[in-house]
Length: 198
Length: 101
Image (tube, rainbow over all chains, first blue to last red; front, side):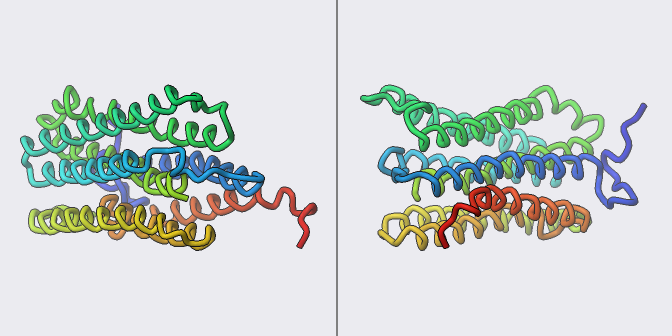
C-alpha cells in the first residue's frame, strides 16, 4: 500500500504527513529535555552550594562546539535549499559538511569528557550533583547528535537513490531531518549557558 | 510552504540563512562575554536566558521555517509550551508547605 501525503498536503492538516509527525516528535523531545532542565533547576535551588560551571568545565571548547553546531545547522538548511534549486551536487556537499561538523562536535565533546575522566582527582558523574546533571544532559544531547548523524548519513549515502525516483519526497525528507537537526542545535543553545556559564 | 517553492524565494531565503548565521555568531560571543561581567546571579541568569531565547527564536523561526508555517503546528507548539511550563514550575511547588515566606 502506498503511504499517503508524502508530498501533497493533507487537506485537513494543510501539511504533508511527515512534517506533522516530526513536530509531534519534537514536542515529545521538549518534554524529555524539559524534565531534565526542571530537575536541574530543582537540584540547583535546593543545593546548599553549587559550583560555577566555568570553573570546572572548559568554556573555550564549549564555545567552539557552539560555533560548530550552529554552522552545521546552516549547512543542513543549505542542503535542503540546494535540493529546492535542483542542485544535487551542492546538496551532497552541504550534507557532507553537516556530517563532518557533527563529527567535529563529538570529537570536541570526547576531548572534554576525556579531560574530566583523567583529571586528578577524576571527575565522574558520581563525583557530585553538578557533574551528574552535566553528564546526563550533555550525554543525552550527544546521543541526539549521533542519532542525527545516522539519519543524515543515510540521506547522504544510500538514501539518495530516492532523488531519482521521487525528488519531491526526498526533498521533504531532508526538510524533516533538518527540523530534527535544528532542534538538536536549539537544545545546545540553552545547555551551553546553563551548564558552562552560569 | 507555498512561498518556499519558487527559485527566487529560495535564493532570498539562503541569504537570510547566512545573515542568521552571523547573528548567531555575534550572540554566542555576547553570551560568553556577559558571563564574565560579574553580575549578580539573578541578573546573569536573566541576561543569558534572554540571549538564548533570542537565538532560539532565530533558529526556530528561520531555519525551521516557523515564521512561515501552518496553523496546526502553532497549536501543537502552544500546547507544548503550556505542558513545558507545568513541567518547569510544578516540581518547585513540591515543598511549598515547608517554605518560610
